[in-house]
Length: 211
Ligand SMILES: C[S@@+](CC[C@H](N)C(=O)[O-])C[C@H]1O[C@@H](n2cnc3c(N)ncnc32)[C@H](O)[C@@H]1O
Image (cartoon, rainbow, N blue to C red; front, side, top):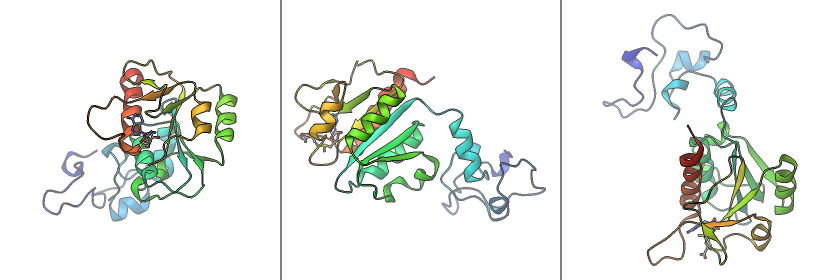
């Protein structure tokens, strides 16, 4: 990318992204003519500036990590958007929504367009899918019998399954999990926000496996 317009945030306008492509347009098919003409104000890393959505997803698909993220959605948990955004940042293979199909996309900040999101009406269906892929399901919650996430050897291919705010992992999810992992806490609150817990757990996988 050209050094003079490669920077993504303008100090003068606080505008994110880049303006119209200066000079002769590149011929690579990954570039989107509309973005080249109008500028690219999306929240994407500089490597993907001016690339079409399809080209970005295709590139991400060549290097996704083998961990999956699943979250129960029985009451339209507002954390799901944040979980999807973090899953995109850490390049999870897929996000699985268990329960209600509809979820609040606002927190995803459009990252759901770049992320494969699969719906399972029930925990049984998530389990059937995971077993068809030979992938173990690990619950993440601070429940009796849970073991510390810290120091736990996370499998390369796994599903990290989170519960929703207030109620946490359902009994079915708990029973389905090979192990339930808790994140150590030291203060007075019973738990942390599900989106924050998901980010910590995903980053634990990254710390163990990502090159
Ligand atoms: C707000 S918590 C609610 C349930 C929690 N078991 C309780 O006793 O309050 C919602 C979800 O966030 C995640 N979570 C929150 N704190 C956690 C922790 N310390 N360890 C692991 N997961 C946690 C879990 O996935 C949990 O299902």
